[in-house]
Amino acid sequence: MLAGVSESQAVLTLLDDPDPTVRDALAQRLVEDADLRDRCWAACAGDPPPILLEAVLRTDALGLIEAWGACDGLEAGWSLLARLHLPRQDHAPACQAQLDALAARAPHGNAGQVARWLAHDVGFAGDREAYDDPRNSHLPEVLARRAGLPIAVTGVWLLVCRRLGLAARAVAMPAHVFAAWDGGAWDCFTGQAVSDRQLEMWARTHGATSAKPFLAGADDRELLLRMARNLAAAYARRDDLVRGAIAAVLARA
Image (cartoon, rainbow, N blue to C red):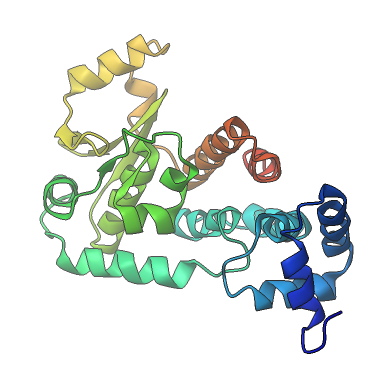
């Protein structure tokens, strides 16, 4: 080891070695040596190289799965899912603060007014250009980018409405999730109102016999499992095998 260079710094440098045998040997050591892995993680200051990130994902997977199994609330579980994007961070406090700030600014009349405000005044919308990007499922990224999958932008609306004490539900149809409340419905992905007839047509054109079974709204666990399924598919399509495998387990938990 070079004088003045710590073991963790040396390992982080060698993770960029062009020789795959060197990288593979270090990857295995990082999985097996918890102390070295932790020191390297601390030394990389929140910007871990891919090999270290994969080692941490692998070794922290059981803890994430256990925490996920014990979590039923939408906000807590959704924040926990973000550890697939960046492990070993408590994403919940920052997400809570951003959602609190949105609720403080939002109209307090009804859930429909909140949906319109989030879409037209704040700019939340579906990500049409990179629909399959995993960031479109992670709460910290959705809040930062104001974009996401239908279930994600609807989830933000739902969490804001809950802070305001407004009746709101997520209608989890095949291939899409809509926002709904007594007297109306909204597509948070497109930023448009949706009629009962349109909901019925959506259900029938996507393999369901009727929209009625979906209109009562999905519970938090259903939404969380659907988010995990979305992530498992998105990561698999990117050959991000470790994250994809963990997300697939979460989707069945």
